[in-house]
Length: 523
Image 1 (tube, rainbow, N blue to C red):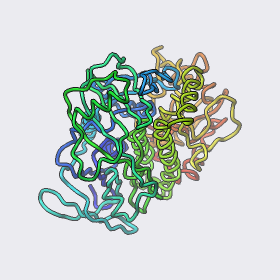
Image 2 (cartoon, rainbow, N blue to C red):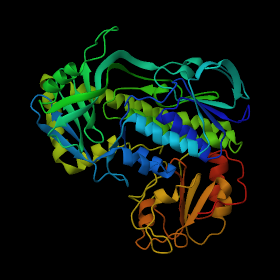
Image 3 (cartoon, rainbow, N blue to C red):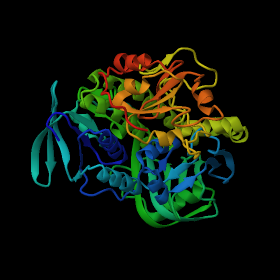
Image 4 (spheres, helix red, strand yellow):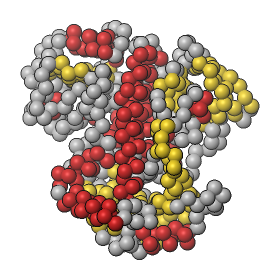
């Protein structure tokens, strides 16, 4: 890696590995270091949501992840005292090709992502800590401490994906702002015996603290309970203590055995003021920390990585001005803030008492029995409502058709497209090639040349066929139009014309990209 054009990713968890792999897929030299001498064996984050799976599918790793995990088609809210289900929220109708949650222990997620990173030529340097950082206009000098002692290196950019106690965050000179009263959880990675079906994540409400049951592959499960502060020197909870909490807060329906990991942990609700600090960019828990309620943490971090990587790649390669990286903060900071707010509220709801509990139960009954409300809740949980419609990178050229996606929203993936040989094809599959995906309808010449080597161009009616006009309805494209899908799956430009000048203007004026090379990428 060159001393000035490469990226140092600090942290080899799911967020760091995703960032590094996405950068490598886009041709960027990347180096990954992690303070742990070996990958974690602790289950930690265990749920992947639909939005993350869409991106991981485009990376080529979703089948491997599914082979190690368990599909979960629903979430339920359960009264922890009686065992009565207050709301059952299925994911069947969420607008994604992955209408489920995937429960998978973090070591398995990391193993699959590390395998993909290796395929892309990335070597994770283990037992290496970031201990110093100094940046100037041209690069970042970092100090790394490893098995052979301390050494310095110079890189172009640093991505801090090193968790809640981030060294990158500290050395970059920022801190987390938020509520630091702390919430304490007892957590167990165990096998369970239960009559409860393993196809549902269950959140148990209880006045003494919520409980959460995440079924994993086989008899394995992750169980968490909100508890009082056990004290700074408290030993890890025992299996008997976990069983007592399960008896009290899970309606006596769960028996635990064969523990792999028992621990207490404390969660704050906080976020850094800025995600970009010059040549240092923060992602995942290094940028935001919050309650595990709703299983949003790892997924939010993975989506940070998806948003950041393509922008950073363009800047590192000299294709775009560094001002493009400001949009990483502009787009992802509000998402992180909303996640912190929502998970805090969900935790508070789970512990409500008296009139608050009665109001909660009534609301859960309505959500669980009014299908559109349940689908809306599932769609929000799956992070499918995240959009960047207010971002300066989102350009709607011409009118908008009612019901169609707007610029800034995630690209729709409707059923009904076929290849010329008649086999079905999905937008998700078309997006597997690194870079942008430009969907074009109409006879105008030149869109491929306008995009150049920045991605792939797919002409509707030539490269793929749309006999039922599903693209027209989903994207609002009439006889002529185009949709430019960003590498993170979001719509950057939607236009009512196929004029290549619109694409050129968007790349130059909105993304600050210099003229692309002439050779377009093949479909």
